[in-house]
Image (cartoon, rainbow, N blue to C red):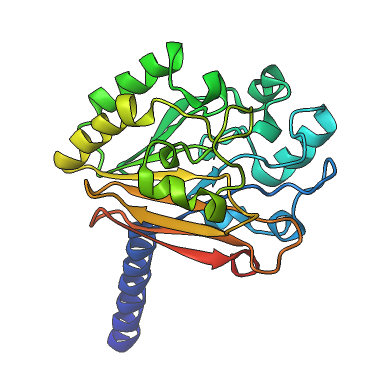
Length: 273
């Protein structure tokens, strides 16, 4: 009887220990540019992923050819990503922008917002508005968030266009090899913008105060499936995205040890997600 009791206690302890480890280690997923050339279809591999495995789902935009063109396409994308979930974060791209009112009816959110989970602040911004300039009500909101972060171990800035490539001499030279769109003044282009004059100094201040800052863009997939760059000030620029029909499409998986406030990431083939 004592042996049976000891084995039961050991089993119970092992189970509790396993639950604790599972809580400490969670994963987040970023996928982007999942569109095909025809509504309402998305990349077939993306449609087959079990997203319940991920504590936060980050969508980098351009989900369908014209995501918000009609309720049929929105319903199809929603059946995959669950837009109403607070942990589904969607940074709108130019292919998602047809009807913002329709988008909001599914998400319950404006195109820019903040979400906090597991000690991380996720800040979603709208890089289609005002030709990629963070201005007006969005600037007021972004300033409020960035000026009041004090307890978060990390800030993840989620956006569609790779706005940090414009205005950076080295990154600008990499645009043709990385970004889906070139630098210019069109709606889908990387527009010259105010990222480095309005947002970046606040990100550096946060970083210097101990909050690790990661910017995640989504407008890649044609020329490259992944991108990573560390600025001299310690800010991480990441991007991941898909190319329609490519066999080497990748998503970006974050591994978070919550108790240790440790966040790492890796690019993985979408077939392995």
